Amino acid sequence: MESLDLGYQLNGFYDEMLAAVGQPRPAYRRLYDHLNRLGATELQRRHGLALQMFRNHGITFAVYPDEQGTEKVFPFDIIPRVISAATWQRLEAGLKQRLAALNLFLEDVYSRKLILKQRAIPPEIVLSSSLYMREIEDLPVPHGIHCHIAGIDLVRDARGEFFVLEDNLRTPSGASYVLANRHVMKRVLPDLFAGYPVRPVEGYVHDLLSHLRWLAPRGVDDPTVVLLTPGINNSAYYEHLYLAKQMGVELVEGTDLVVDDDHVFMRTTRGLRPVHVIYRRIDDEWLDPIFGRQESLVGVAGLMNAYRAGHVAIANAPGNGVADDKAVYALVPTIVRYYLGEDPILPNVETYLCAVEAERRHVLEHLDSLVVKTVDASGGYGMLIGPASTKEEREDFRRR
Image (tube, rainbow, N blue to C red):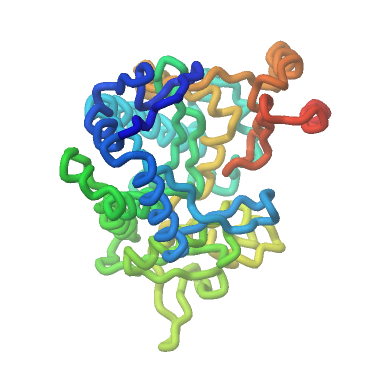
């Protein structure tokens, strides 16, 4: 049988599976042998089956600037990434450390502001961020937790070392795709799961619902939890629908909710029903037209008053965006050391702040080899990928 890596070339980037052509890394040996036994033709057939399953289940996503938001079937790589237990333990420890520090940062900058008063980081970077919400200063959050769901992006360098690429602490997407990916993988490559001690992911939905219920206001023993979506045109609507269905909670839009006397209610055929916890998938500025964008048609008027009164919990907490501002990202190693007294387990990618003149000059001189991001954007928007950019795109970013 023809080897799958016949003619395969290592190109200088870190190869997840192979240390050299024909030489799989230890964690991949069993997978490598299994794939070679299947052969290229059978592997391609099973990949086609997987894509058909994604289409049949409507597992899609969209990025708005790409073809005006045309939905695409979720991209599926039939060759799974294998992460050893030892590597995962380090990643888990690093992510927990980072999130603990960022939560303490959010608690601090919206209350005592000690990290700013002591100038451990430049106060102007935080306070000038468009994502900093003065409306929630000195507002306690349930159990002192600001970030309940995070979508931290990781990347590997040529040596295989992991780096944090982004902290997504506002309304991160992706959990449903992990669950769907695992379901499909079990269908198309069932033998792998018989031979590998793979950690399960199916408990995520149960854990998420348990956590959301735990956030309910004091005295509420049987809370009503809802998932608030901008609607069917949102790029992650599939995920909103999937998670709500799996948790057994109502998927609601802004028009389904109403605030009366600082309490949130859901409109039902039997009248108004109190809502105690909102898992929101709407950005801060659109959540409440009274406090944010007045033209918002997806938010709920008066929601922030209900939140301030402590009658409803919101996950993630409003105001988290300042912690995943791209300028603040560059300061996270300092933030970890300040609050935890520890060196970061997971390093940042080397980052240049364009607010600093010397670093801005370096960026402008090397636009063709750097990735440039708008500090308050997320989800892949507002960025320039230098090596893949045109001269016109680079000039546009240069003018900014």
